[in-house]
Image 1 (cartoon, rainbow over the protein chains, first blue to last red):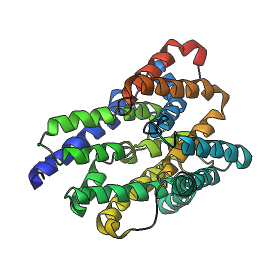
Image 2 (cartoon, chains in turn green, red; image 1 turned 180 degrees about the vertical axis):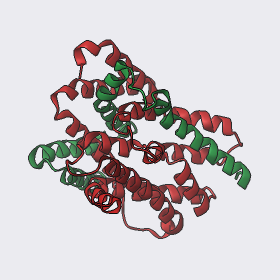
Image 3 (cartoon, each protein chain N blue to C red; image 1 turned 90 degrees about the horizontal axis):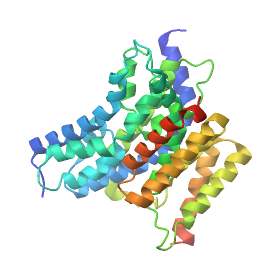
Image 4 (cartoon, helix red, strand yellow; image 1 turned 45 degrees about the vertical axis):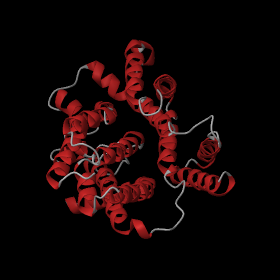
Length: 111
Length: 231
């Protein structure tokens, strides 16, 4: 079933409004003219590493450990990324290397 | 230097940082355009959605909503829930986006996972303008997504190159930027809290429901442990 153009447009706006709201709320609550409360400054500084950790897990949430290939390609690729990053310390090489390893694994080894 | 030159310099400096996003967004944006096409929505709709809503995962969820009974309230609520993590990105970027004039509106409007990751993890190069550097990262990432969607909705049906696994580039980006964060000693506790909280939330609440519980756990631990975590 398809929505009519007006309905579709309203849906686009509803979804956009939801995401805009989540993006603007913090900036609206703590306007730049005033210094935010200390607690908020603390959260602003301590949140990024935690949120990056959350994002990594969030990206992997669809990976099944019980069904084949048991998340092995993901595990190997991430270990490669960590190793390459410690060795070369270059963001692009680590990301590129890990992605290529992952593609080879899912396309030929575990296909 | 005039503004144009400053912007150009910032753009050149920012671009390499966004290459993984270029790759990932072209692949995922294309996938999105193709899926929308399969559901009966052409270029106009998918590009409009990408340009106005600009929220990757929610856009994929929304494809289902566009092919069922018309319910914008439900779509709005779901969009808030799926996008709730932006609340924390905003808190984290309050300082960095402070006093940037009109550019600030665009920076906030387009603050996504990838832009947050790069702009919060990569140190601002010394001789590069702060406003134009962040603006470049946000603008490039935004354009990649809209462009990917456009390509997918037009050429998607003809693409035969085996891209299986290429979308892992975004996971790799997050892993590497996470490692970059962990280089600083004072970030490590918070990083571990994030991973453990997310894993716990995933185990308890399952796939598709983990983000908000994980955010609450992170917030609680950061608040309770404030004295010890510090920074």
